[in-house]
Image (tube, rainbow, N blue to C red; front, side, top):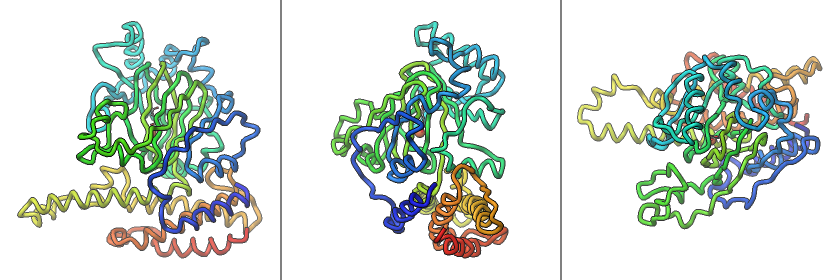
Length: 430
Ligand SMILES: O=C(O)CCC(=O)C(=O)O
Ligand SMILES: [Fe+2]
C-alpha cells in the first residue's frame, strides 16, 4: 500500500466515524471486468473495490500460471476426475445434498474423495441424475489437510487476510476452500461468515452468481422475518408470503467463466449456481476494511443469543436452578457463531502484535521486515493498526465484553489499546 492510498483509506473511515456504511443501497448496475494484470495495481483494487465494498471480476489472465488450471482440467476443459482421484482419492471431503433443505442450508456428510468422484461419474452417465440426489463437494479445506504447492498462489489483491493469518499463527484452522460439483449443484442464499469478503476462482466450468448489496436482503424476508433459501423460488412473488419483495431491486447477475476470479464484498448476500461441471477455489477473508462490520455482526449474534436465553428464562419457573448448569452466552455464541468476544479479542491481539513488530522494525533498526504478507509494506501495517485501534476501543467500551473474565489474558485489553494508540501517534507522519 502506498502513502496516498493509506491517507485516503484513513479519511474514508474517519468520515464514517463509528457508524457502518449506510444500510440499504441499490446495486451499482453492473460488475466491472478487470482485463489486464499489468495495468491493475493493489492500490487500484483497494481504492476502486475493497474500500467502496463493490464486486468485480478479474479475467482469466490473472490465474494463467496456476498449477490447478493445468493439472486438474482435461484438454477439453472438463474436471480431470482421474487426476484428482490419483492425487487426493483417500482424503475425506464434506459433501452437501443440494436437493434437501435443512434450515437455510443443505445437510452435509463426509466421504473419501474417491467415493464422491465415482458418484460424479455415475451422475454424468445417468444424464445428470442419480438416486443419491444432487451432491456438491463444498468447503473442503485442502490447504489445511495437505501441502498444495503448485495448485494456486494467493493474488496480491486478497493478501491482506487477517482471518487466515490468525488461524495460521495459532495453527488451528483456515478459511481456504475447494468446491466441486456437476452442473446443477448450487449454494443457497447467504452472506459469508462473520461478514467476511470472499474471492472465488473457477479452475474449470462456469458459475452464475446472484449478488445483493448489503441491506437489500431485508426486503426478501418472509412474513415471519426469515431470509429465503432460494431467491429464484416463485414463492417470492407471493406478496402474502414476502410482503416487501416488490421493493427489492433485482440482483446483480454475474456469469463467471473458467479461470476468472470474482471479488465478493462484505455483507453482500448471494446465491451461486454451477452452470457446468465446475471446480473452484475460494477464501474468506477479513481485514481493516471489513473489521467494523465483523464486530457489528458479532454484537448482533450475541444479542440474538441473549434474546433466546431470556425467552427460555421467562418460560421456565426454576430458571435459577438451570442457570447453574447451563452454558452462558459466551459459550453458546462460540458454538453457534464459531467465535465469541474472548476469541475476537485474541484475534485482534494476534494481528495487532504482528503489525506493531513490523512497524517497530521499520522505524527502529531501519530493517525493513514485515509480518503478515510482506508484499503490502509499512503503510498497510500502519493502516491496519489504526483500524484495530478503533474497533478495540469499541470492544473495550462494550458492556458485554466488560463481563468477560480477562484475568487469564496475557495482555489486558486496556493495555493493548494504549500501546496501539501510541503506535498510531508515532506512525501518523510515516
Ligand atoms: O461457489 C459456491 O457454490 C459458493 C461460493 C460462495 O458462496 C463464496 O465464495 O462466497
Ligand atoms: Fe458465499
